[in-house]
Length: 244
Ligand code: PEP
Image (cartoon, rainbow, N blue to C red; front, side, top):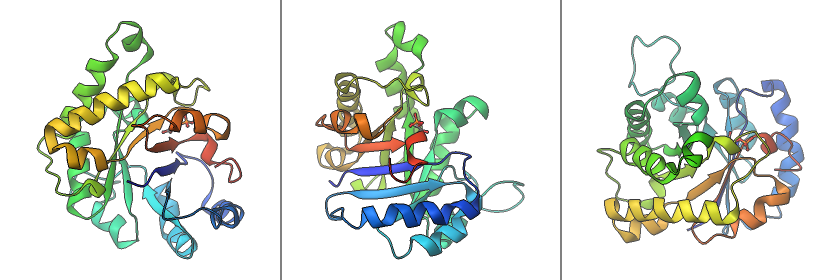
């Protein structure tokens, strides 16, 4: 499986600022052997139409930061998987901890969003992760595997390329603290074991499990060295094209 490095711009940058990022970044990305790594950028909905045109000539694939669980119709403010697919989007983040926290998204909603993405040929990046209190209480494994199980409930998978999982400990997101390489590997191994129980070892081995939480150029190599760490979901550090 190819490692995946996905940027998550969150609610940052104006659409008019995006082209500069791409210009600065792509000259460096040309040197990456694309057969060894997949690069994606998850931008705000407002940036997607223009970014499709700008990224088309690059190796960077486009992602959204959310997707509606609904197909179409009277859902004011929602953006459907079909709309995103039509604009050339490849990935959709679902269940990011900021959506779970600020928009009260529960696992059942995350699961419906992942299903909506899959049914339109988008690859959901399903995020799971524990809070600091949960880790300190020794509940991290239980919390994270329960989230994974519920977020994938009823989802069948024929192809490992159709799914990405991101382990993002909440205490490491945007805080400058990262999980140690050993903590990340330990959790990723458990997540892969769960995927193997559900989908079989062949599929589980092919599903990228990304680590997210204050990844930057200075710590990426160490964290990504874990055998079950297949790349990263990069928030703050993706805003700077050079660092990304
Ligand atoms: C994220 O937004 O998914 C994330 C991991 O953010 P940061 O890299 O800034 O911690």
